[in-house]
Image (cartoon, rainbow, N blue to C red; front, side, top):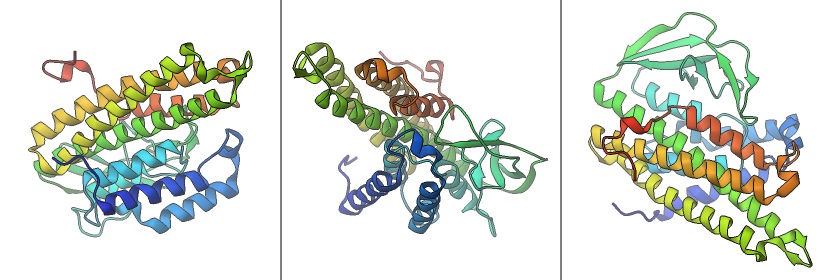
Length: 300
């Protein structure tokens, strides 16, 4: 595989990064800004990115968008609708909705129904009221009624849907980690102690350097898993995605915890965005979770 992004993929990454930077929350207080959220929702809806798979996008391209939106803590639905689109594009006359994971919808803002995959059967059902959970950037809702079958897919499609779900949640881990690391580096460059920026001291610089190494490693393992969504046999793609999810989950948690430590006393306060990144990482880890026992030889 060629790990380099094509010109079109680079443009997609830059567009997603700009949207996240322009309209994503710049502070914890911004999460409660209904006007900003409405503008963000309109901007994201206009891109058509929630229907990337229906438009023929690869797993790499879906992962690119998910990563950049998570980096900017974008707090409108993407993960749920893009996964639902991947599943429903194989069925006739399917209506847009979000995806159901373990009985609840993790991206339920402005959505009234969800879709789930049981074996090869596709089911849809209504959702109850949405509310913010542990992840402050995402509204969650539970099923509020029976699920009804709307069709079925073949085993190949079902398998690749599972791989894409792992890859998109892994991309969110990487994006949130990148955002937390950038936040810590920015703070280390402006916060002074004893007349020097704290980033000039080894006790701060070394953990940040380790975090950068973890981010770079995560980029490599995720890029391979995202490529595998469409290019490898399902069994090999599942293994690649599981390894990526496990590695990136551990790496992202370390990077986010380091960011909180670098911020010192304010890192443990509500007003510091570092904890919002950590919350996103912790919840993304448990969306389509992976355990070490699921990988034959484990990881060193």
